[in-house]
Image 1 (spheres, rainbow, N blue to C red):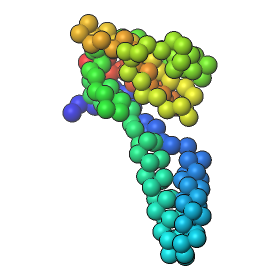
Image 2 (image 1 turned 180 degrees about the horizontal axis):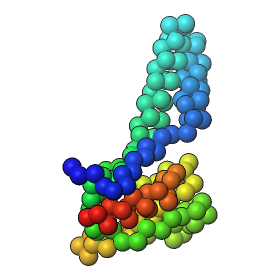
Image 3 (image 1 turned 135 degrees about the vertical axis):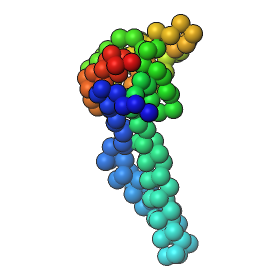
Image 4 (image 1 turned 30 degrees about the vertical axis):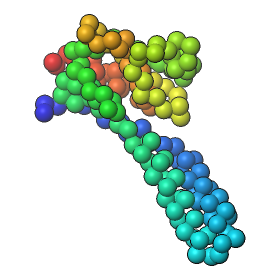
Length: 153
């Protein structure tokens, strides 16, 4: 696979507070199991913490990449030639595109804990998706990587 002129990769990790919440979920389960004895309490603590941590990790493990002539965002993979203009969204504008401006046909890679986003128009006439909404901490860099990949394709 050929690398683009400006490769980009970002992992949308869960915020640190989610790991504390995972531990607190384990503590809650341990308190529920406390009347049954020490061993069930420990199993509840370890099992509850592990289960909550696995859920937080899996939700926060999605990646956005520009590789070669493709944009890969989560499960979606699109050639950059099918993409139009990229619009950097500040936190206020990103919230608007997540709520009242959103199109039900759009592809949303949405992480509410990331305030900024990039909206990329889809120009492929055979694709019913009007745009991609990508939560990203670095929207300017992602837009530049898409632009560079389109120029090199």
